Image 1 (tube, rainbow, N blue to C red):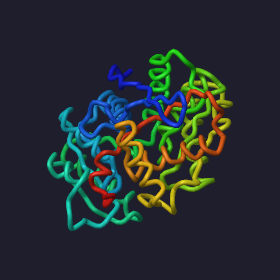
Image 2: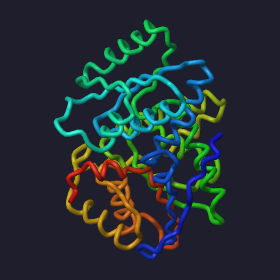
Image 3: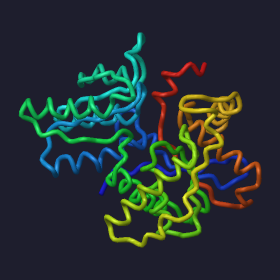
Image 4: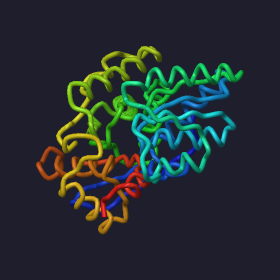
Length: 304
């Protein structure tokens, strides 16, 4: 569907054939995988003749930032529900929401569902037709975006990928990459490095998204097999880190010019390095790191 193709580059690192898919350069302000998903999700919104959007996320959510930007570009009303207290300092993705002028509602995590329902009802009272988007773009359209993205990346390469590493959050990105690469080459191992969730919840969420997708498209349910979701590098939760992960971000920037962030891609790259250094990744393998973005998360962090 999407004609907005991001670069695939090759870098010299750890003596491997290391490729990087630059979805951090996806053509939307701030880039990232959420922009790619939104191209598909908001197309459904338009196809359903909706003219308003309600979605949710955390204070520095890349999903809500991408949603707000695309809604403004498309002329859609937009309400963002933030499941956190209103901060004293407005920075990063949240600053962009304020600049864009979308409606922002702060609430507790336990109240998200009720608040989103109330905002949907308010749009209807205003004579609008609202479209509901789960946090993180967790839906079939979000999964479909990354099934197509897997084929996009493979078409940019002259070699098959043995491993694909990426930051895994709510699960639709990993579900799409898993399904896509399983269809391209069943031997490819897609490894999701968790940024917060623990197993079994993480694996179950991804497997559920895969099943929703394959049932919707009438594919073989065996595509759900062999999901690899690794929760060993979360450092205890969302936006938590250790010194090794933070040093990895600096080292990668110095050696390659690739900018990672401490919330998402820094964890994923660190996890990938541990796989490589431990010998889990075979010598001579073609490894793809899928850069899902996160520059604004870095800029809003207390990293340096």
